[in-house]
Image (tube, rainbow, N blue to C red; front, side, top):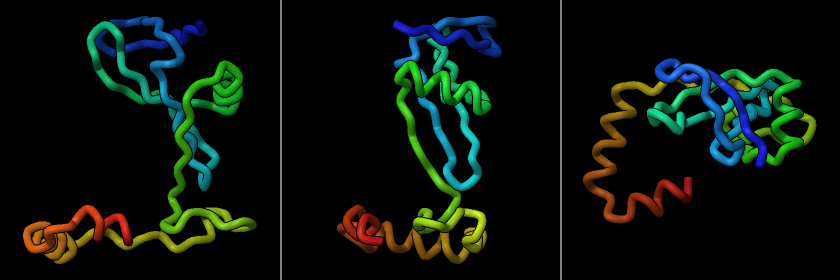
Length: 114
């Protein structure tokens, strides 16, 4: 079993199995972070992962979650930087969403189809 050493702001230096760490890689920005829950106090925190750390973590079989800043995901030959960013969520958007939550009996299916 591979162990990862890191520092929890509450407990100091800790060791935990890599199975308890999630590596999140952003495809559109070529960056990564480790999401960690301290086995001692339960605090959840994030640590930056540089390229060398990402390679090492992938080699030991860490769980990986890929994501993108692109709204529709990247298409072959297109980077996330080429896609226009989404506008900020407005109060009107939130009000419309609240009304939909109240009026739609099958909201989960509707949201899944978007």
